[in-house]
Length: 396
Ligand SMILES: Cc1cc2nc3c(=O)[nH]c(=O)nc-3n(C[C@H](O)[C@H](O)[C@H](O)COP(=O)(O)OP(=O)(O)OC[C@H]3O[C@@H](n4cnc5c(N)ncnc54)[C@H](O)[C@@H]3O)c2cc1C
Image 1 (cartoon, rainbow, N blue to C red):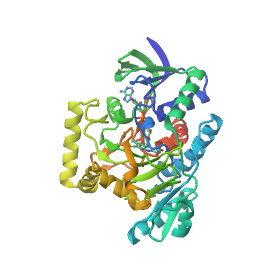
Image 2 (image 1 turned 135 degrees about the horizontal axis):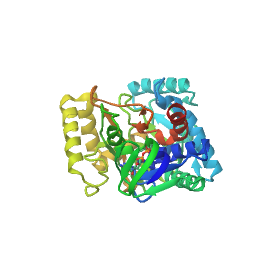
Image 3 (image 1 turned 60 degrees about the vertical axis):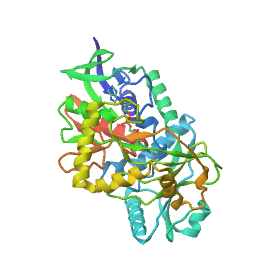
Image 4 (image 1 turned 120 degrees about the horizontal axis):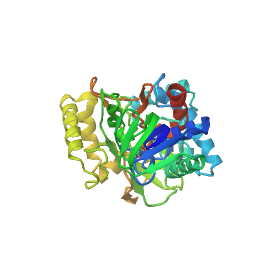
């Protein structure tokens, strides 16, 4: 049996970044990265909006607030080094009415507290960035929001690890452990320390080690619709004011790195963890577990789940989905939208005790294992400083 100093489960952006951080610190460390798929990018890290967030959504004292500004800068620097294109076009957050304007001011305050470069501006000035935009008097401008192709980053990280001599074992699903021995579908491996970065299955892996008992996964599906008309019809990322009580940012315009315009993502409750389509990886056990949790949340309307579920299910109606986006940029041509693109599923944790969605990243650990739970958005943006944080605090 092969022996390693560190065994990392999950080759998403978090697992890859932690492996790279460990290897940069100690080039002699023997590291194994286990991934159940045949390659990188099959889940969240390869299926997200590709936005480098700027850090103004998050409440003070959260890990998200601490790491996003740093993560944005670190990811841009990495992309410069590796010649990965970044579209540094910035973003506008727009309000539909007076109530949303109040939240916009709250975002500005959060941005200032978190060290994020944001500026409130009149609608006339906002229109110099995006001529077709609507906002209720003012809009919030974030010049540091940018977009990139997430798979390009994953590929570069994978190449770094191969060069550094990290072993990557694809097609190796974590099944369980016995002491220091980790059992997978590709055989057993012995490791000094296990680092769980298993995304949609992070709760299950953590529970195998006695952690994460109060959490369960409530997956939410993000659909995107491509705008097939002129790529110049929207020039900048345009977002609505979010409901700060839940972790989703609302249907927005993303200006991708190649200039494509897309709207989304939705946050539709998914019925099993990898429920990308009706046929994809159905699991009866997951379906029953998630349906039960959803039914309880629906009945009690915990954190407004009932309203959220109704509102999100409406987005299966194309005209409704497009209509939401068109409020932000009324100049857009609603008939110009084309196909749905690759959906993503958020690995969102529910706290079973408080019946609330967990907002911040969560890490639980002891001397033998570290578990990254709830690595939801903006964990792609935060990946590098987050990996540093995990190494300093738990693997040092
Ligand atoms: C729709 C959507 C939009 C988003 N937009 C943004 C954005 O614009 N900007 C941003 O910063 N963030 C965004 N995010 C969040 C971001 O994508 C995630 O936070 C990030 O990718 C999480 O990375 P990860 O490595 O934890 O998870 P993943 O990428 O899911 O990686 C986990 C890996 O673990 C593997 N795995 C799972 N179980 C096992 C097992 N038992 N054995 C072995 N391997 C296993 C999986 O196959 C997977 O490859 C978005 C997410 C979604 C879903």
